Every structure is written in structure tokens, then in C-alpha cells.
Length: 237
Image 1 (cartoon, rainbow, N blue to C red):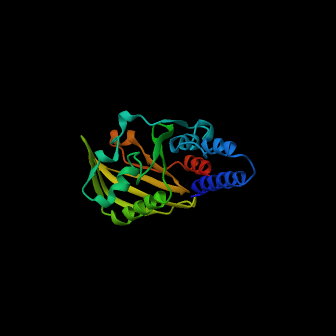
Image 2: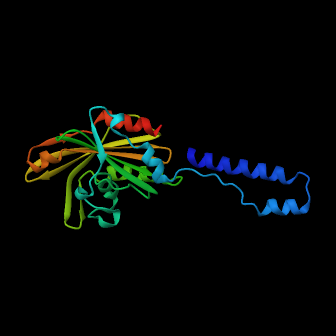
Image 3: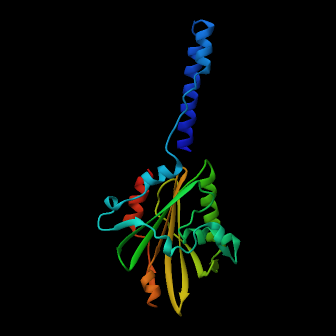
């Protein structure tokens, strides 16, 4: 990953400079004192701090309200709380529940809305080198394997999806994918849409749903707001 490469290069530079300095003249007392001095090490923001800087704000999407997701309405608070009838579909359940996909070092959630009928949820995930690619691969496999739907449960919550279908993803980042899923609630069918974009060791997951339509038993087909996705993808670099 670019971030890992930068840190490695910084560490090598410090090691080389330290070695060259040690080759210069000087008495043993000075050399011993220098040897006891802690060497500087490369530092940088933590994964959580990186994500906080990358997350979209109201300024990035004019006309939209952007805020942190409320834990009150979360399907589950962690991957460990979720059980599925088809284990391979787990990445889909996580993506549509604002949970990290794969083995993330850190994650954060935002929700962007223009009105009560459309909400686009954004989940940013930061990974160790190589883990982001694995997470995307798992998500791709889940889309391909779960076409006939799946059921996810967490405590007293149950989400049953009737179908999952891959969709054409807008080119973004190093790789991207998109899918839609259908569910039936009180005899009414709803379609939700999701997408994921990886840039280096960060993945942005998008999920769009009309909660009010579901609650009111009105059919819905809610797509990820393109302006929100484009703004977030731009901040990923």
C-alpha cells in the first residue's frame, strides 16, 4: 500500500542517516552517549484518525445533511452479533448494516440525506496491507454466491433478503463493485442499493435505503446518491 511504502521509506532513510553519522570521528564517550539516545521513528495518524480526515462533511455535499449514524437504529453493533443462514453472505450483511467488511483496523459511519425519503449510508474502513483487497474479494464472492437471498439475525432483529444482483459500478479508486438487494416487508417489496470502492488500504461502502417507505408499507427503490459517492470517492484520492 502507498501508506505502508511511505512509512517504510521513512524508516530506511533514518537508518541510513544514523549509520552514516556513526561512521564519523569522535571519542568513545560521545559515541556511547549517542548510542544511548533514542532514535527517532516515523509517526503518523492512526487508522481512526485517517478515516476521520477522509470522511465527507456537509461542505463536501451542498444541500445534504451529513451526520454520524445513530447507534439507536443499528442492526447490530459488531460482526460478532450477526448470524446468517449462509455464511458466505456475511460481507453483504455487514455492508448493509454499517458494519466493517472484512478485518478492518478502524471504521466509521456517516449518513447523508436530502429528505426523509432517501438516506445514503457511508462506512469507511481502514486495513493493514493486503487486508483491503481480501475484503473486496470476499464482498465480490458474496454477491456472486447469494443471488437467491439470505437471512441475517442480530439479537431481536432479522433481515431477510429475497435476492442479490450485481450491478455496474462506476469506475472509482483501485477497484469498485455495486449490487442491489430486494426484501419483502408486510407484503411490500423494496429494493436497496449498495456499492464499495477501494483506494489503497481504505474501503468506502455505500448503502441506500428508504426507511420511511418500508415503515409505511410503500414500495421503494432507493439508489446511492451519486453526489455523495463522488464526493467521498474524491476524498479517498
